[in-house]
Amino acid sequence: MTRLPDPERSRVILVGASDYKNFENLPAVANNLTGMARVLTSPSICGIQPAAVTVISEPLNPAEILDATYEAAESCTDTLIFYFAGHGLTSPHGDELLLAMPDTDPRRPHSAVRFDDVRMAILSGRKAPRKLVVLDCCFSGRAMMGTMSNSQDLAARSEVEGSYILTAASETKTALAPPGEDFTAFTGEFLTLLEHGSADGPPDLDMGTIYSHLHGRLSAQSRPLPQQRNRNAGASIILARNMHPRSDFSATKGDISSIVDYMHESTKASMNPKELRAELLGEHLPYAQRIRTGITLAKFFPEFRSEVCQVLVELGSESDLEPSDRVHLLGAMADLGWSPQTAKEELLRIAKTPHHGMVSLRSDACGELRRLKEKEMAIEGYMSIIMDSEVGISGRAIQAQIMAKYFPEQKNAALRLLWSAGKDKSLSASSRIEILRKIYEVDSDALDQVAALIRGIKSGRPSSAP
Image 1 (cartoon, helix red, strand yellow):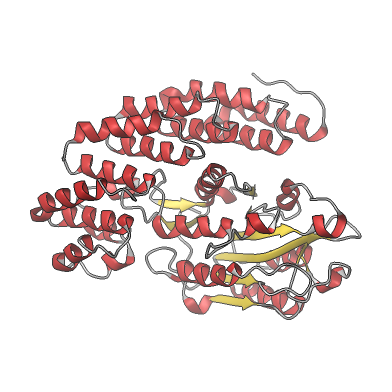
Image 2 (tube, rainbow, N blue to C red):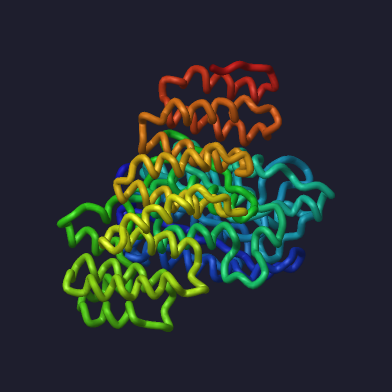
């Protein structure tokens, strides 16, 4: 599980429904399918062969989806990926999860795809050691039954033994497909992560890292939080390379050929310094792209370093520069040696300053300080987030986990917060269980205590923890 999917032996099924007869239309779903196919087949991101990807848009009947899934499972000998975007609902006659197709009638469950049938199709892939399921769907229970089912149930009803499942847990059409956005909320963040990487992530993105990143980003935007289910170390399954130019991997000095793999497609296509310079100066291009290109140009062609720094300084003064881009720009400036102390101090200020709904921005600033070898500054930044009572407990727990991962000496401080949150009965059961799982990831010696507390939460019996 510590490698990327095999390009030829992996199989992908992408299913999406956007034009519904009995539910609200979801026009962004069409873009979801195009985007997912693009990143999964990108040689520099996931690298799966296009021929191994089956796209089913506006499925006509359940058999179309199930037949394609069985065929993919039968021929897959590495990583099997199933993705669905559209409406989800629960059966009026039971509690099972149904995936709605364009013609699905909520009064006739047989007109939708039973996820139990999809599960069996996936499980039939006995030669596929790695199975990933991604569901970007909502329940339509509110319109059908007058109530909205608990989002945690979506993940619970979707377990596939020996695999990893990630669900959007979206509850409404607005949350699923925000007006004016090209993609649904969940898949949009998923694609952004795969295409641009995570500044705080490892060289390769495993499903556990992907979940933590999406949870943080969606939480910061006050959008429905994703859910995960992990069987047989499924969270360690690697899906993609980390494309962020300042990920841990890009800090490996001298390994130019490997660094190139993590650059933006336009940069990777040509290392001609004149073309890179033109991209750096391109006023029509997004600031984030120009910053990444500047880092590449300065790293590979030191004779341009001074000009790159001058351009980055000018970009830093732009009034419409996104806060997240500013954080990465400051890190780049310090790394290139341009007023490094000033840049580091500004990063620490950002890390310590409360930003409404922008926990990920503060975390990015901490990540930049960590990669700049400013250990004490980074810890100070992480601690400021962890101790900020205005930050949601889930967000604080994620930052505590990150801090403990990179600074083991802070493990006890992180565990104090995590245990406190895990015992907080004001939180939902699913939130407490998720936090308790983070405790085990930080401290494997706590397995017995974590397991006992989780059993108590699930059974409704009182439990204790250290």
